[in-house]
Image 1 (cartoon, rainbow, N blue to C red):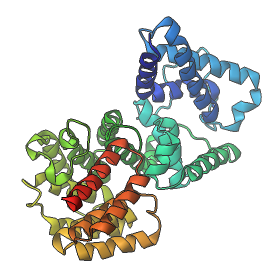
Image 2: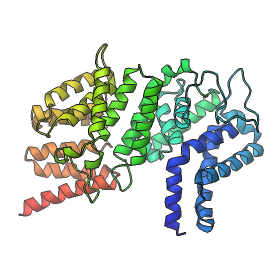
Image 3: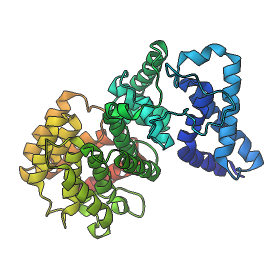
Image 4: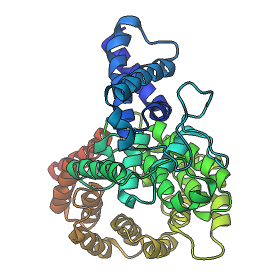
Length: 426
């Protein structure tokens, strides 16, 4: 096999098998750090070996064996590693002995209601003793296998900050002996907000990939939708669970129209709405209708309602921008995020004009938290262009191009700059 073919096979296995491999390896090491290292070494071994022997019929089984052997060697080599991160130690039960017929990689619990490996790992990692940012970072990096650089971009921090955050989280687990175990059914609600945040960010990382050549990482999008459906089955009465699923469905309904045949992103106003997935839109609408009545809706129900309004409009011009602005106002109350303020400014430009919206965007920029967020200068460039301030718009697009890490989005920004240059020389 060629090296490119082997690399593709390993990358595919990484997408499909990471969570299962980590879960199985953790059972041997009882140590999350060591388990991650062993799994990474197994993938490195696959790169070196499969080129000579060919890709095995069951890549997952091959990788599991390789990771397990390394885990056993690591435990034997340094017995002190076992208590450093007691991932599965439960106060009143011993660890599952080697060789027992326990089909669960986590050990059994009578009230365990989590039957999906990755969902179990996510709930385990979202321990309430960790700060919310640490929960998100640790889970996305270790459980979902998202590169540290992409996790950093998703959480709007630098790579160095993210690496330090991950290190501190692992250190706290080790020093404080936090028993990051499979939570009982009674403990799930306390971890739900963090788990919803992980699934939402996983979807976002797939919907608009922070790096790489393609705008979308369909594998991450599909996995996030799958996890949201599992959560809906597990907690059907939780409005925010239904809201998250509705948000993902209403947004993903546009998947087929988001890039042109060359892979360049297509803006919302130019997308062919007849190709949007009607089944997804209908299901999302039903979930939103079920989630809005009663107490004040949460962030995911409100975001889903916004996405659904976009999906329901027959044309871009027919979008109910006034209602979207009002929904953003409600969303800012329950989730005062600078990204929400930026998105609200885009909607406000359609009701109050680009000048008013530009003032809002500049206020967001002065906050400083979105300094590395390429969508901010990209939005600013669009507003400036609508105001006829072409030179300033080009400068903003150049900044967005500098900050963007995804090649498809960079192609779109370059095309906008190229179009401006052609217009000015015509």
